[in-house]
Image (cartoon, rainbow, N blue to C red; front, side, top):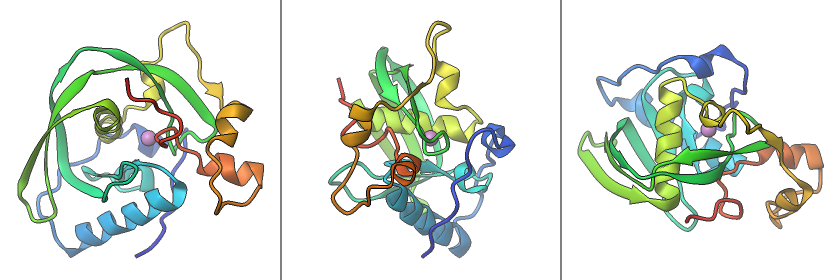
Length: 189
Ligand code: NI
């Protein structure tokens, strides 16, 4: 297990399309476990392989109070409705924005045992799945901002709500670790 460096905007790899995984071998398994560690270390609830510099279609997701999920070749196969949600990204530290996401989605992927997993998701899970699949297609959440909207720095109020007891008080370190996918920030509608 290892914590991998997270690539940040404007690195070009975040704009590349990740390639389909043909064989789920030990290197893919190791990468996915490292991505789970990296996501947890950064305080995020989702991470796509391009964010650690690997152009493969692999994402990890871990909602608060849940076990980590590992998805190979994930696809959003249906989406319905629209809602506005607050969002941020480990690759764009220190900022959030309001973007449009679906009310619910149908999602399909393989797990590490090469079995097909199908999910109908709403709320936070739907949002994270859309965000992470976007990453694999080179799309960042800022791309969904309306013209009149801008990325905004995380406010001190939002910032303080993200501090956990086991963290130090270094502002820059904490901001760097912040991910909007944290429980305190996104209120599923
Ligand atoms: Ni992200």
